[in-house]
Image (cartoon, rainbow, N blue to C red):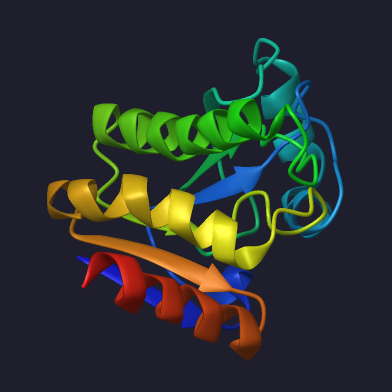
Length: 169
């Protein structure tokens, strides 16, 4: 099942949380800062043991100081404002979702939280981020007990729901 909601993603219980990441799994920007603040030195040490993570791939660590057991780190592409690199960025964004789902499934993670990957500091418009995410998440939702996309604002949630109704209902 796929659920769209809004609020503070760091207060929701699940087995795993997808974390927008820097390729070296260091404190990044946006949600990553909040996750690293809560995870502290233990999370930093766990990330130090991981290999570099190219855009679109995913890495797994335990989640320290969070209401989830695992973090799935994925490096999202930068929105390029519709220029000639847009199709590559869209493919990479889709790969972020697919890689996170594949890793979660391989580790037996049955409940998974997603932020709006790419729509924060990497500036994908929510309508485009939603379309790409739902294209990947909806067909695979039955593989999990619960997939939740938690949006930061009610306006973003409304946009994701509009995209879902218009293209996937």
